[in-house]
Structures are given as structure tokens and as C-alpha cells.
Image: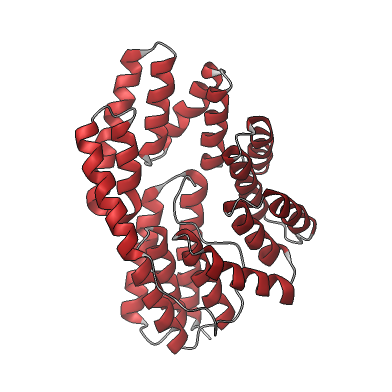
Length: 316
């Protein structure tokens, strides 16, 4: 069991990650990572410290190091179900769906509650099993017994992402709206809602949603999206301002957190960034790095996972 002081600091790490998720603030992720590093230094015999650092490392896509931290947390007595939940999230993030599915299904069979069913719903959605995911999303929401709006808003957002991936824009919009109704400042849901607006031709609505996000969030994806929509709407001057802002921020983040941002930067440079020479090398680097980062893990002896996947990227 974690010592009280360590447990409090580990909880603060989780809350900072949550705030980063909701508000689209990379600075919160970085603060959480710094606190988790300090925790491991001062309490190397406490599993909660290693678990906290594993979560922050996974947030920045440092998956191999996150897995090493989970192993250390296990040696320090961390709860096995919690460890397996984090492992399943990492497996999911690197596309090892078959291995993750074993963990998610076993957990849902043993304890069919909001967290286990919701986690399985998200995985099935990512696998393209839409009908199965829909059933699980509905059942998970029915079983929610908490009072916080954040878990349900997150689940609704992921449901919207599934339908966005299916190009059912109207259904995706409905679920993004539900998520925003629960958490009005939910940046990823607002950002994807703007994406749907733009795709449906409602450019003014998309611009109005994106402007405050781009101004407040330090994630350049919102500025890049705003630049793109403004350009399509015939507003090149403001579009260029936001394009330059996104470019400078991507350059900074690729240096600081390459595993998490080089693919997004490559996409930016190859599209609204307008520099294919700069984008192509970044995309090649990311393809190689993803292949070398993907963990080779056997889950045969793992206990089931519990809980929704941890976030690995602020905008989903």
C-alpha cells in the first residue's frame, strides 16, 4: 500500500493528467511528469511512485520506459489489476489489439462495471467492431454510479471518435455534443466538433469553436486546425498567423517530446504547414521509431485490466 504522502502526490499526478486531457494543456502533462520523476527519486520502494511515472511516460508515448516502470511498480507491491490496466492501455496504443483484447474481455467478464465495459467498448471501437462497441458503450453508461462528469464525458467523446472514423458525421456530432454538455470546457470534444462543422460546410461555426481553443491550449493541433479552416474560408491573413503559431510550437514539442509529437508535426507540415521537405523526414523517423518502440509482451500470465485506457495524446 502506498504511503499517505506518496499516495497524495500520485493522485496529484493523475489530476494533472486529467486537466491536461480536458483542457488540452501539454504544460499540465509536463508538470505531472516532473512530479512523477521526483516521486520515484524520493520513494523508490513505493509502487505508487513508479505507477505515476509510468502513466506520465505513456502520456508522452515513451511506452518501453512506461512498461519498465510498471514492472518496477509490480516488484514494489502495486495492485496487479491496476498494472494490467496500464499494460492493456499501452498495448492498445501501439496497436497490439489481440493482446489487449484478452485483458479487456477477461476484466469485463470478471467484473462487468462501467470501467471494464467502457474500456472494452473503446478497444472494440478502435478495432472497427462498431456494433459490438455500441452495445458496450450503452451498457457501460447504464452502469455508471459515480458523480463526476469526466468519466462519462470521456466515454461519450470516444464514442464520437468511433463514428467520426466511420464518417457518420451527424452521429459523431451528437456524441461530441453530449460530451461537451457534461464538460463544457472539454477541448478534444470541442476540437472534433469543429472538425465535423467544417466537414459539413459550417466553417463559421468551426472557426468560432477553434479560436478560443487555439488561444488557450498549448497544443498546436488547434492552431493548425484553425489555420486550415480559415484558409478554406478565404481568410488568409489570420490563417497565416495561426499557421506560424502552430509551426513554432510543433518545432518546440518535437524536440522535447519526439515520440508523442513527431507524427502530428509531420502531418502538419505535409498539409496546412506547407513544407513537404520538412514533413517527409519527420514521418519517416516516426515510422521507424514506432516499429522499435512497440513492445513484445506476453499477456498469458497477466491478470485482467480494470478501468478506461489512460490517455496517450491530448486530442485523441
